Image (cartoon, rainbow, N blue to C red; front, side):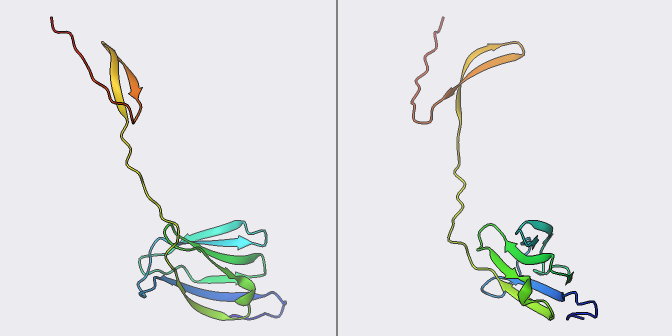
Length: 137
């Protein structure tokens, strides 16, 4: 159960599900349990149902739950808002304003020298046009 026990140590029982704006679960979301210095102490990934293992957090060593995934805005939940409760939380991740674009790159090379077991190649700059000539004997 949540709540402060006899020793005065704060505790919280937390069940979390990650969903998108349409209510669909999101797998592979990172959950970092951070200490008061905001440094990660322990981490989890959401499963195919968007769920994490149920957390039973005691004491105030864990001060922040941080949810993150590329393409979504990062969300922080302060633990001091959860202590003394049994919590069932649906975290809705919103699309990030940052767009990740993977540029296709093609590297061009010119064979300078070829011998048994060795090839020497020169890199050709992207904006350089190369015309090759070969002597025909």
